[in-house]
Length: 407
Image (cartoon, rainbow, N blue to C red; front, side):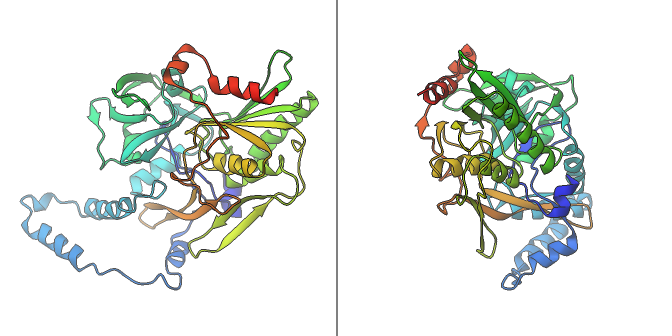
């Protein structure tokens, strides 16, 4: 990802991938502690809080705790920082101590992982499955977007457990198993699911031709990341060329269970679908400044008939793309409401090896609305995909998409 780091690209998804060592909130480029200090001392943001009560509690604990000699000052400091950050109630903002930062860094390298393969987020004080990775043990075992994870093996998750804590308990080596107690969305009773971890290859997209005449391109975009942004764009271009070479005029872009990735990848894809002059997305920073991203000239999918599939595992860059296409009136959106994650994070690294993954940008739809839980993408045609459908091997959303695109 060095190209993106050097050019200042910002990732648009703040969701953990449950893989070998932890993972995945591919937030944004790393910046130095010096840069972080500069960022945190912008004009109008230099006021310091009164920490008198904090130090009173600290001193009282040191003087009166029955096992004071066992207190670890570093753990207390890291715990205090985490408590402060967690109180913000921002799914994308997280503080990692030096050990967690090292694990995070090691687990975001490359595209081959060991684990169960699921993106996790935080919703209503609970750890929730945002999206199982295509072809992963998690998906094969029946994990679905919106599932709440209640227990990991014999450990019951509580409101004090962060997504990172859950990831740390779920991750493991290929060949080992983990038992999850899961409450499927819409169900009243949890179920136990045992998943065997394995090596996972994470393809960014796949293409197949479907329908009786094989005249519909099913373009499955699983994520908006690859080794680099350029690599992702190259893969997109290759698939689009294949669609055009097949002389197919109908395209189903499948963004279900796509947790996002590079913001620029979503803009690149939208620019291949829209003609010149459409607002694709808007970016709002901490000072309230807004930067608009517009389509330039239209691309290789400009004249295709398009349907887009989404579900509540579609997040971030997926919502940017589907929202832009929907508001431009270019395609029908089919499925269920999306996840509602319209922020991007920067990683601030500190000299002790810890890091702060801080939300610094909001993504806005073309009409200026912020993408969030209360304002996610609502499909033009809402079609549910129940656990019963999953177990029967039927896909009512795809059936509806084929029906719609053949009209």
